[in-house]
Length: 319
Image (cartoon, rainbow, N blue to C red; front, side, top):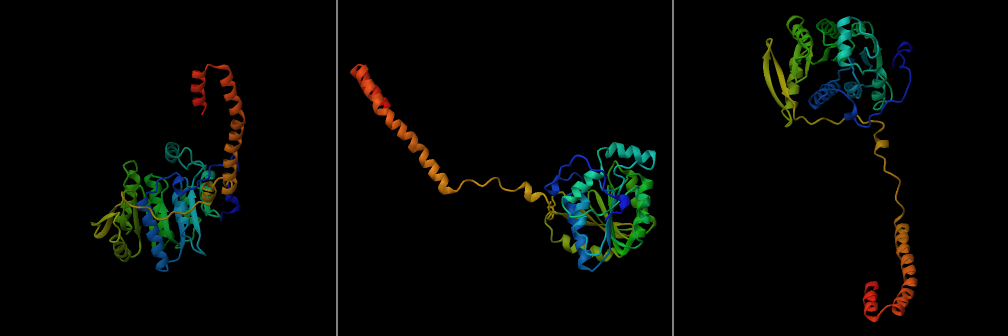
């Protein structure tokens, strides 16, 4: 949980509460949901313990997903500027351009719709994270903060310091045309600090400073069982790397919102069948009784006042 200095933002009007995972705004494709699930589950199966860390959270979509894999005794830390001012002019311009509606309260409302308590929140530039998280304590780090080269370079250095020997780091937007700084920082780390890519998707790279070959072989075995994702192996920087096309990927089971049951609760129960049948039967009977009392008087009046030919026609119509 967060420290008193990092307590929840001031309350105001109540924010919308998502009733489904898909209601949470953000960019987290099904193929990457599947890979997050695979890596985090693989770590559990292999007995790899450690904390979880996300740098850059937006509205909390991937954080909600990652938080579902936190085990007893592990800590999940999320670092984001949220409402705080950016540390420099270039970062401030990026925040205004891309995340002008971002607030910490929105993140908290979304996260608490799926989990009973918040992760540890660090509302600050990601440059402080090395002083907030223990060295060598994290088994999974997701980097999706600034797109500026100097900031991503710093996030990579922090991830290398904070990860366990077999830990996994995931980079978002490492190949997007509007984020050349991310690409430069990530591939620079592959070339200079022995970062080992395991696989890539259309938006994310999964890598480690540990034994990439062992993880890659196990991942390939799983990919062979999938019919909704294409994969191939490329030679990059002297080592194999899996390339995955997941445009047809089917998303795994999502965390369930705590508000889902309320949103799908049935409306007021209908009246018992017996009462409904009785009401239906009584209504026509009453109307029939009224018509029955009035009909003979109407027919008598017609016979007394109108010519016989017209009388017979009207009587047939009444009948």
